[in-house]
Structure formats: C-alpha cells, structure tokens
Length: 530
Ligand code: 16G
Ligand code: ZN
Image 1: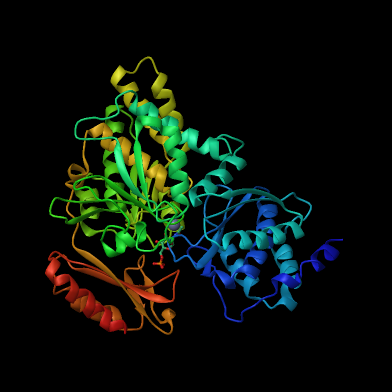
Image 2: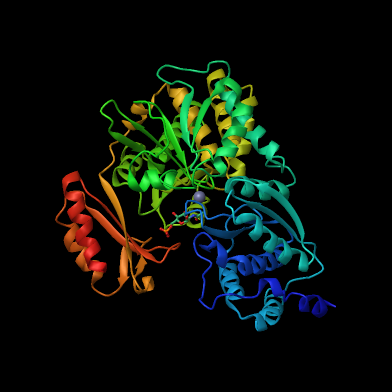
C-alpha cells in the first residue's frame, strides 16, 4: 500500500530541471525563482516526512528575504519554531539533488532510515512573501504535500516570523498564543499598549516613526499593526509594496550601503526604521541636520534591550542570568560595551540564526542579534513563571511588582520564535519611550567603530574554510597569517573573510578606529582572496 502511494510521487510537472547541485544553506534553498518549482515539490514531500517523524506541524516558508525580486527560496520550520535540524538539511540537500529515477527510492530510504511511521498524520503550515513567483511555488509545494496525504494549512502572504509564530502556536495548543494572524497582532499589540498605557509621548520620545518596508510583506504587516495600535504609535510607511522589492531599500541595503533607502521622505533627526523583504530583520537610522547618515543596527538594538532588561531585573529584585549572543559581524565597540559597561557575557557564534538561537537557549534570558538586524530574546519557561509570580506576590513592593509587570509585557510583545522586525520595533519603541529618549540619545550609548563589507566573486567559494565562529581562515593555508599582518597595522583593526552561506561569493568585513584607514584595510584584505 505504502509502495503504491510512493509510486505516485513522480509528477511530470515537477521533473528535475537542472543538473547543478544545490545546497540547503543557511536560509534553506535559495536561487532564481524559475529553477525552484521541482525543489518546492520535493520540499513539500520532505515536509510531510518531517511532520510525521516529529508528530507535529511543520512550517514551510516561501521567501528569498532581502534578495532581488527574481529570486525565491524555501525553508522548513521545525515544530518549536526553530530552523530545520542540521541532519535534515543534509537529507533535504540529497532529496533535492537526486535524479527523478531515484526519487521514489530516496523517499523510501528516508522513511526507513528515520524510522518514519507513515500512518501518523502530517500537517504542514505554509506561507509566502509577496514575490510574483511565490503562488506558483506554493502550488508545487502543496502538490508535494498532498501526494503524501499531508494536510496543508495555508496562511497566504505572511512575514517569515509570523509563520514561525503560527507553527509554535499550533504545536503548543495555544499556550504561546492563538495560531491565527489575528492572534499574532493582538498578542504583540496588546502588550505594547499595556506598557505605554495612556502616556503616548515621554520626554524626548515622540510616538511616531518613518518605516521603510522594502516593498515587501512587512508593509502589509505594518499596516495591519497600525490598526491594532491605534494612536499609541504612528507608523508612516514608505516602500510599502508599490516599488521594486528590496531595490535600494530595506534593512540589508541600508545596513550594508550605510545610506537611507530611496523613495523615503527624510526628516532630520527623526527616527527611521528599515526592515527587510520578509520582515525578519530591522535596523534604525536617521539623518542629522547636516544630512549625515547615522545607523543604529542590530548591535545597537541588542545593547539597548540588554541594558533595559538588566535595569528591570534590578528594579524587580529578580536575578537571572542574562547573556548576549553575536556573530563576527558585531561591531567591536558593541562587544566592549556589553562586556565592560553592561558586564553581561557576550558570546560569538557562526553566522546564521540557528547558531545564535541555540546559544541563546543556554541563558535564563538570552538576547541574540546579528549586526544585520536579525534577533530576538529568549526567556526560559522557569523565568516566565517566576516573573508571573512576582507580579502578584503581595510580599513584594509596588515598585518591584511594576517592574515585574513590565517584564511580563515585554515577554509578550517579543516573538521568541525567531527575529521579528515588527516585534523588535515595538520593543525598541517601548524602551525608548520608557527612557524618554530620542534616537540621538540612544545612539550615544557607544560609538561604532567605522566598518565596511565587501563581496568578492570567486569560482569556488569553498576553497575558503573558517573556524572560530567564522573569524579565522583555516584554508587556504597561510591566508590567515597574511590577514593578521595587515590588520596589525591598524588601531582597533579587525577583519575576516568567510564564504557566504547564501550566495556564491566570499564576504569580507573590516573595522578600525580611523575612518580614513578603513578603505585601505579592507581592500588590502580583499586583494588576498582575489
Ligand atoms: C541568512 C541568515 C542570516 C545570515 C545571512 C548570512 C537566517 C534566518 N538567515 O539570511 O542570519 O546573517 O544568511 O548570509 O538564518 P551570508 O552567509 O550570505 O553572509
Ligand atoms: Zn529576511
């Protein structure tokens, strides 16, 4: 019977088109949209197997995040909202690369190896961003899911973090929130409004911002949020979907180019926010009266959150172990500030959210952020329980209870499943409001070291391998010594090269104390890999 069903898997519409090997990388499969149909079909099959093996709902998100509109991609989301387990990334890569003639036997092999009980029901929660190619790709995935009798719960156009949220809520039977988009908006916005109460502005803080939505799905979500938030926060949305997706706009563009987005009505010294094409990254920025651009990236957001959580813990007399997880891209000044001023452990891990998320789980309260603006905060269940008790404990002072109640609302406005640009925005807005700060005041926490990124196209990016969280080259032999030699000539100099996990390129990062030295530093390092 099983065998009979599996024979139906070969679908003439979704035959393998390309012979090149494609890898399930940091962000799933990502490539030109027109090469993805059979991949989506096969990922639909795999999602069913994954759901059966975990006996839980699995997420399937169709997006290529900050990449150009003609790209697309797919990633699977595991039951607790985390990225697909590493061993299954390998299974996914194998499955997608086998020839059609071996598709059935490969599926049989996975079922056998993973000991999958095919009679278990499978649920796959699907979502997609606003790309033109996404509906066709969704059809391919749904066909794959249904041929193995999986149940599809499609949520249409959603942000990546919304899909993560929906998976977790479905699997935790509403414990985390209602598994609907309404449930998502209401949970986050109610917590936000509760902390702010009736006082909308405070000190230098004004409850209005300008948002660059990258012409992606975040524009839709931000408009929806606005309805729930009412007058508590005015979000003026630019690049709301009418222009080209991620083209000279969005968090990645603003962060890497260190310039404001296009089609944006700048007001000097005014708080601006940029999110990426699937709304899982966020950076803040502003231009001053001399039109100078100022960026407040993921590191600045992480330190702001860490400092505020530390304050609230102190006020509530609750003691938990706080930790902050970063990658090699974190600005050296931010790491110094976290270690020396905040006196919180700062851990560096490899690029890619799964690494940050896993490490953050080690702490009672684990904050993680990539400099590119992807991050969130994870609270252990026991921590949430203790805070809930503190809010109602009659032995505690009013001050302590108030601080504990603020913490609880903050927990509710954070999407703990993954970095969520709009949830992070609500959190930053809450903290700035509490402190009565405008964006300039926030920026003063520490001064970023001048920094720059370059990418170099190479024939084979895998000749470069790294260790020590991407900070040290292992191969080609001798390259690291050469980098060290160059870097040692610069005050507060730091530079590393690593192969991208999402594109066929080598990335180069450099920072140093003097802006005028930066170009020479990064070009000298780049010349080593040409
Ligand atoms: C993906 C990752 C992001 C990482 C980036 C690095 C997730 C959800 N996203 O976008 O965290 O910073 O890849 O790309 O893990 P790179 O390897 O091309 O530098
Ligand atoms: Zn993204």
